[in-house]
Image 1 (tube, rainbow, N blue to C red):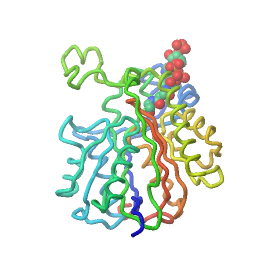
Image 2 (cartoon, rainbow, N blue to C red):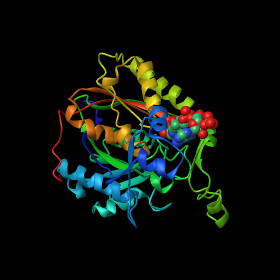
Image 3 (cartoon, protein in one colour):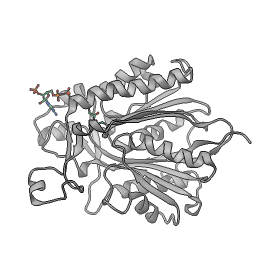
Amino acid sequence: MSEIKAAITGVAGYVPDYVLTNEELSTMIDTTDEWIMTRIGIKERRILKGEGKATSDMGAEAVKRLLEKTNTDPAEVDMIICGVVTPDMLFPATANIIADKLNIRGAFGYDLNAGCSSFLYALVSASKYVESGSHKKVIVVGADKMSSIVDYTDRATCPIFGDGAAAVLLEPNTEGLGVTDSILKSDGAGRIHLHQKAGGSLKPPTHQTIDAREHYIYQEGQPVFKWAVSKMADVSVEMMHRHGITSETLAWLVPHQANMRIIEATAHRMGIRKEQVMINIQRYGNTTSATLPLCLWEWESQLKKGDNIILSAFGAGFTWGAVYLKWAYDGKKPETDR
Ligand code: UT7
């Protein structure tokens, strides 16, 4: 029997309607559109508004659209992994909540938190179940309501993040298409530069932790930037070398959308043109676990069967990695919900 690979057979996404522009941010903090565009490259980001709205609502909408466009019955889903750093609750898993909202019963699943590399880690983890033959329809969803942990008085972090969700369906493929190789890395020493100080078992919530604003993202931008630039490029270039991929044979780089300068530096080290890079950071900002599948969703109509695609990310942990996949179908699968 030919080798089983895990192929993406559909992708769908969801972003909330509310658009938070640089102009509006400039009325909240001491910043300008010019600073944000020059230093980060973000024009606007989406924010999930509304009482009682959580990460799972966006994740469930993305998965609902995915099930519809791939004609998948919820009862057929074997497994659902949710990449997420802003779960609805500390427990149970957001994957369980999304599954419940869509009447996916009995499927194995869990959340995976690897900072901004969550989707990449989840994609590789899920692909192992498909490759083993044990699971046949596996959903990987990346979803984050970053606005729930962003301090909108901190001008160094609040322009960066946005809310969103996107999901892919993985199925077995024996034509040599799908997830082909991965390099996943972490270095926990980097956690000092990017974390949330309180709310976990180290510092459960108290009035003091709230007064000290410790339930928000804490980030030292410069070390994170330096690590991201070198590590994302290192693994992406290594992946090209491992498989003899050149700037001519690579169809697309799908980079994590954290900072336009990090994306450009990665593309430059890989020796590829900007036209080969999926970039939507201007409109969505850094949606953490959702950046990579949101790109795939947006570019789906341009993708062709057999395309060589490298996905690359860096995030809190520190975590980073690259995945090489061969795209499994031509063009766009119709969205039935729009
Ligand atoms: O997905 C992984 C998660 N995160 C990342 O990948 C983020 C990586 N880091 C970065 O993208 C960048 O470090 C930032 C965008 C966060 C910051 O850019 P930077 O070029 O590293 O700026 P900086 O922190 O060195 O700040 C430069 C100056 C400072 O002023 P002084 O001290 O030079 O007077 C800041 O106070 O810019 C100031 N500044 C701002 N000015 C206007 C910081 N934030 C703002 C702002 N508007 N929003």
